Length: 303
Image (cartoon, rainbow, N blue to C red; front, top):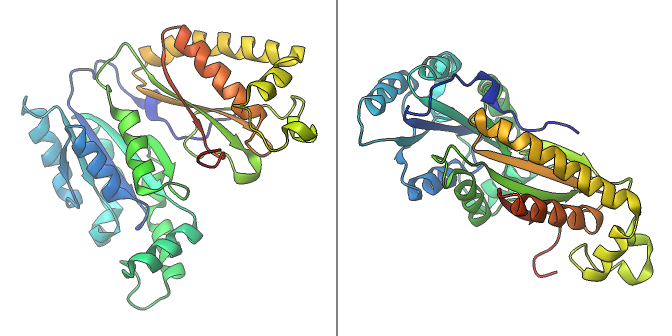
């Protein structure tokens, strides 16, 4: 079990339920900050793009003192220039004023290079250097902000639609303190661990249907494949034990004010074992009364 997402629930103060919510979005150029801001705006957040760092505390005070604004979102990024160095200190200050959360967006170099090529827009730091060197410089400048993030999202595999849907699922219903939105994800280790995962379980110890010829071109969503995986005692025991563990843990996460949780199950290719297990765990959590959705990251659309 490993923890991938930086979650600041442990730093969250008590008695913040009545404070207005302020989501600060930052991250690399080309990683999707505008899409996240638009998704939050569609959910009713009061949205501001590129607010100067020195004005953020004043903005936090304004929404704190305005009963009409209970949720707000803003973007801070490399366009801030030298003022960005003050952001970690400023963000620590506003946590005392509002229920502040920081989302940090990033992507692999290859994905960022492709996006800059497709849009034909220059990198904000690219006046006298290549795009790849500009990306590296931006990563270095944003590193202190990244360490403060409540949620780090790698958008390399996201389309614009996927990213907006992901944010909508995470923040829709965020004010219901009696629940937590759960995303159960399957993945293949060969494609990397989902960087937004809170809890990760390795199911590669289970027998692999990929070596059974009739199952090779199917997925864990196939009833025949699911029956095969479930036929092994260790599969049933694993599902039961992990379901019991999660049902025990979730009320504690809720009491700490956590509003979303991503639980990831990984096998070699993300096609069979992790898919079947993710479906089973999602169903068990739903039966226990939790809001749970499933996402099979590495299964191609329509398969």
